[in-house]
Image (cartoon, rainbow, N blue to C red; front, side, top):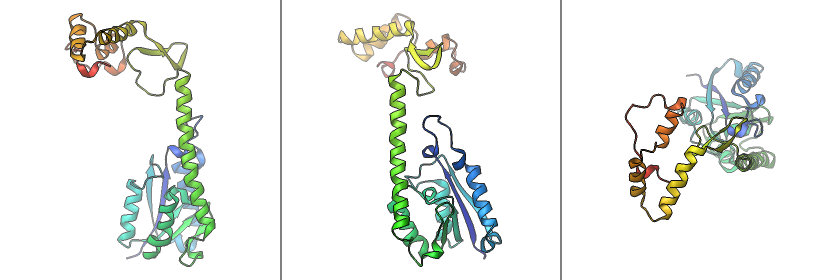
Length: 251
């Protein structure tokens, strides 16, 4: 049975521009695919083999529980793979210890060649090793980059929160989008009065059950019913039975 040349492609949030929240074209799935196909097509020992793609779109490189990667390793263990081609070593993973183990121990055991196109890395050139400090340093940089970018994403989200901007699709009860700036949220006066009432009743020592019973007795809409009454498109499917407050709906 002829073995497979595997193209492994991975894309995740780590490959997105933090400020624009858009995937970099150089890292897109289609761009990686074109790069790998062109590389294989220019190397006679690869282009005449059976080529198979393994892809993880939307999976972080800091973890290895990825469907495409796990299928690739399953085929490696089944002795189906002769060569793995990736854009760079960070596609395999951003944990330099795990990637180092993969390159130095696991894949050589199955006699699998690894090529990282942009890193100019080919395991056939390194007689059973990863290429020493050069590759180890690159893998370390990839891991540190991933951690740094994760911190930048968290920082960017925190900054948006401080500016009063919405960072999720659903707004919390008591807030609405600013009609003058879709990225900002402002207090919803009508719902805010209910939120204040809940806090006042709680401050008086009433339990969540007592608060819920009071709100129901006063005929006050639940957040679900309120948003539906306000015409939220996300609530048109709701049944026509009047919803009631419960303890889970009390802050």
